[in-house]
Amino acid sequence: MKSFLITAFILLSGFLFSQTEKTQLPLIPQPNYVAIAQGSFTLSDSTVIVAGEDQFEANYLKSYLKENYGLELRIDSHYPPFKNFISLLTLISNDGGNSNKEFYDLKITTKGIAIKANANEGFFYALQTLFQLMPLDTSVRRTVPCLQIYDSPRYLWRGMHLDCSRHFFSKDEVKKYIDYIAMYKMNTFHWHLTDDQGWRIEIKKYPLLTQISSQRKETVIGKPVDKKGQPLKDVKYDNKPYGGFYTQDEIKEVVAYASERHITVVPEIEMPGHSLAALAAYPQLSCIGGPFEPRTTWGVSDELFCAGNDSSFYFLQDIISEVIDLFPGKYIHIGGDECPKVRWQKCPKCQNRIKEEHLKDEHQLQSYFITRMEKFINDKGRQIIGWDEILEGGLAPNATVMSWRGIKGGIEAAKQNHTVVMSPGKPCYFDHYQVKDRTNEPLAIGGFNPIDSVYNYDPTPVTLSEDQKKYILGAQGNVWTEYILDFKQVEYMAIPRMPALAEALWTKPENKNYRNFIERLKTHSRVLDKKHTNYAKHFKLNTTSK
Ligand code: ACM
Ligand code: ZN
Image (cartoon, rainbow, N blue to C red):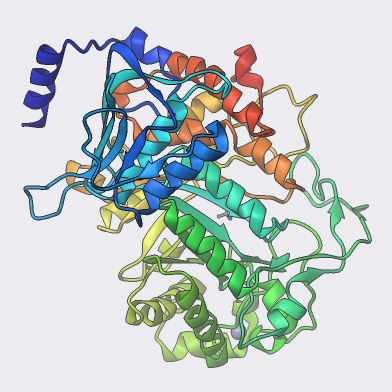
């Protein structure tokens, strides 16, 4: 029915559509249907925003136009949308309210701008499109071209991750990161809050987590390993204490900010491994009892929560209870990755647990650990997501898998009818180098992940059956920060790979074109310049894969 309507619309209204004309619109991600018409609409001080006065999107639009174009527009739900208007009207769905929340219909005529959507998500995305269409030079007329766009995303999970443990980024920097996620119509922010090198979230019941675990006494300088990944002998440290954490009030502020932008924040609390910083404050929850300190170099610690000690579970359950109160989203990320088993192998309590629970080995003990935490989290109405190691020893019954060691784990999970977020190192780790010639690049963790690989990524493995493909929720770009020292460098590593991934996840394959994307990115880079974003500029030289 929709395609009939679109065809009829094109025939009746004389709207034209071609790939060349798409190129002229500096939109990222590329919308899934665009028709350009003759003429334009010019916003003025007398343009009226037709919407409810308390609607977030209407006020967001109003502030954007005031801040960027000096326009003072009135919001009026009774103004008839015939002339000089920007209307935000909810579509009356005929399927019991199940219509796609992220769909929007943006129509610009010489009379005004009509936005229709089923829900606020759609309005928000229509506004992102409108903002990208507005002229950058705010001193000229505020004119946008006549057109019609029908648009909705290909994937449900369009995520970006940020590691705030290895290096800490302030609440305001995190909000800036969320602004980029919003601009590219992504909808998930995976906040990596705990790791061996630092605990970054205030937990009221356990104040030592912020007093001790959030601080490391110094940080390794440069790479602690040689070209083959072997530890170096003469590692140097900077002798500077490093730390930071978010108070619960700051977390609430970030979550609310993201939520207004229709971005779900998924907090990650690592267990049972990657937990040395927590164990530095509560060593009695480890297998060997400590003493420990937060890790000052990169790589993985052997220390982990003792799985034979019930107190480990009670401690983590208390933490998760506070986390659940702070983060209203469906998913809690429990980590689960890179969990060395050497301590468990030697620990009498862990070995006793294996015997009592009739487990085969330490892999099954890890599965026991995750499943026990999953039950607690499920009982509170939430769902766990974990790195693909949680498949080892048996997947917890309701877990979602985030596949990072390639796509094998994701395929395996989908075959077991579990939902999956794809995040394979290549091309989803944005801490890798983005060009082959590293001469002028800041030190990175290694690897090579150019923008065209990111752009061309299709998260749905062709080897899955049509039924299994439905378990692939989408994908996520990860920004690990061992070698990313400040927020300027976060921008450099994330952008433009973030918009490339955004288009891979939003735009249907038949509407994607890499060359066309690069042309749009060149135009769009003026927006980034205006924001003083420290993005990587290799794409301007067309040398991205070299
Ligand atoms: C990971 O990169 N250890 C998930
Ligand atoms: Zn133990």
